[in-house]
Length: 515
Image 1 (cartoon, rainbow, N blue to C red):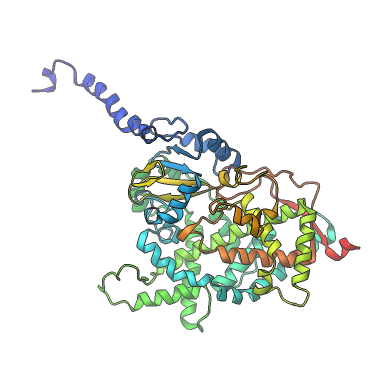
Image 2 (spheres, rainbow, N blue to C red):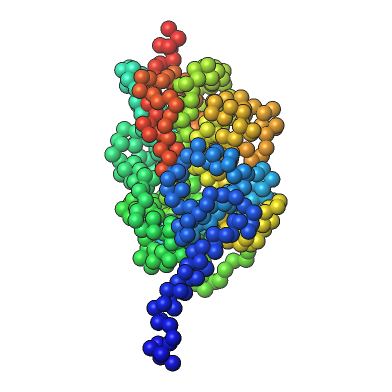
């Protein structure tokens, strides 16, 4: 039968079918959370709640708190191909992070992972046994013994930080804190983790500085926006043409840098740092005979060159930005709370009474300084949401999570929950005394995540923060100035916490303040 002989024109038939197809593929999937018994904002066909995400931003305290207040401890949101349920319930968090970690090992589903060199080989992007192997290879770089050896280089970097502060102490003018803390952490991470020395504190135009900022402050490109809306469609295109989430020029710069570092290490005496651990693991890869096959489950796999470069970039960028930001916010909190700052300084002076160098042992005796850092991380966690993906159907209390669903942990909502943290907008370091921590739930403070896949560099970051702040506060008193924003106004569309007008403070010499 030809189309001409049909009793109804073919066009009319197609027009009748289109609404049915639209319902099947664009509307019916939006009933998922209703069937699961999960509340949440009403989604639009195809785009889900992406417009909500684009309006509310990423690092936004008010939005996260409001959603939890409105929908409760479990709510769902659609975002193109990114369907996720968001959880703040303590028992469910324990299941996701620890008890049922085997079902939530990965940070995303494989159909949302862009396998592009080198970002696809970063520890944050790896899956299952592959992740476990690389994690176990690099973990020893952050042991207590390794941190002790980093104190010397970190103190050298702190010397430059103090020297740079001196001109502002002399002039009494306000300055942008993040510019100085960022230079300090960049110098520290390159020296302690990669054994290379740059002078970003004296040369802000150093290529490391320029390209690191381009990596972090990358805008959302039209291609990435398309991926957010249609990930399954865009994923093969991205992989075919090697289009990554990071800009091409900075990626190529850091790839070349780490490639050169690997070549240099081949002829140098072996060192004890993060880069050397990865290099040794890469040498094991070179010794593997062709066609040797996979190693048994649970054993470490040798690292490829892409593994070394990718994770070198990851730890450089993550170690630089998150630590610098936290250090700047800690100084802001201490400037606003002079009584707390004085108590910290007295502790530092007591610990350093018989010491000449701020070393690993000294830092660990500065418990009140640590409380101030932990409280700063509660108020300004480096990331606002921690993601996991279910590898199988799994039950969390009354909720059944289907295989392949994303589970988000809204960190800001947890950290500003008044039931967990009375007066959450106030800076109160005493929340982190031993007695107070014992009263609190294990998942009420999660700036580094929790469980086996928490932030691998947490100990290094805390050590670097304490050492840098201790050195600075021994010399200077930090204060607010006429152009200090109180309270800070945050840029909600940035991945990391970033004030709209920066953090502007001023300093004076401690001896001068006493006089």
